[in-house]
Figure (tube, rainbow, N blue to C red):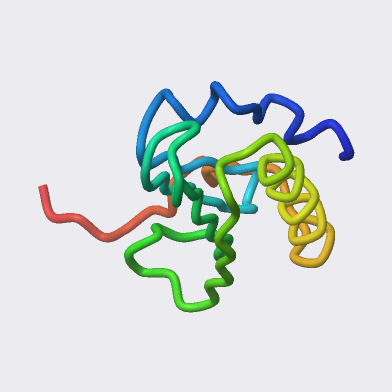
Length: 103
C-alpha cells in the first residue's frame, strides 16, 4: 500500500487542474490552483466515500503547497486516509437483479 500513490510527482499536477481518482472504493480528488513555481500555487485534496464527489457527504480535505515537499505530504496524507478509511475492490454486481417488466 505504501507505493499506491508513488505516481504523484510535481509534473503529474500539470496534466489537469482537477483530477478525480480512486483506489477501489477509496475516492480522492485534486484541484490545483496557481501554476508550478509561482507564489501561492497550491493543491487541494479531498477524500470521500464511494460515490460521486457531488453527492459525497463524508468529505475530508487538506490544502498543500505545490512544491516537492508539498507533494510528499499529499502522498503521506492520502496513504494515511486510505489506511483509516479502507478500500474494497470496485465491482459492479452481476447479474443485475431481475425486475418485473411488462413487454
